[in-house]
Image (cartoon, rainbow, N blue to C red; front, side, top):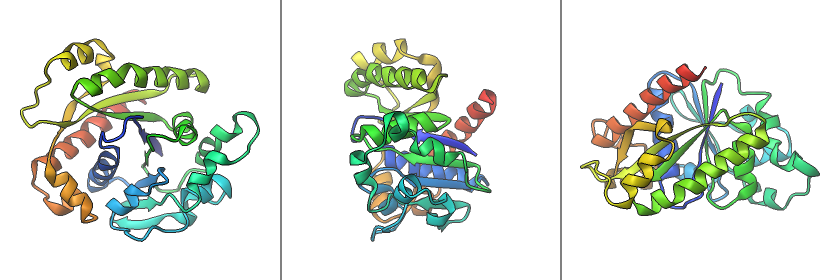
Length: 253
């Protein structure tokens, strides 16, 4: 099982939409996928149509050492969801000695989840402890960034975070960057061009996700873009993202 954290400390960059639609693209390609709502806000669960938040979820996996399978919900063919659970926010205040607090997910992942090819974590923007658990535990970080000045200015901080957690892991944290919410003309302008071109160019995916109201509309209805409009430009973008990511993972292995 290959694990991916969709991570960015900036709010509003589309982490949940990327997790949701990339996950469904992988499932439609025939892979067993589990999506994990790793944000206490529970936005991923809502985006999948669970408008009443389940009380149990990844919180129990981390704090009560139950198996992933115990709290997983089948939501689509080939795709499961592990909700955040009602106690995930409490983890930030939990008391564990030393590094143990940041290694709860790593320990849980040692047990795995039988039959799954991928597990994607929709990470919060503000919880340092949950982000630490994700970046210390997963195989790869996928970082969505906006193609504007704000996105360019955030990138050095994000890369420093990757370097810091690589050191804490004792080995490099694989990461890749996807440009998200890009105007359909796919042009970057101004300060963003120079900053993006000089920072980790080998880690940028060629696929970009174009800005579209369709993605927002589908999410509000509890659907993916494939369910809402299967032949849309957004659906094409996420299929391409899944394909390119699969090729990159295969090369890394």
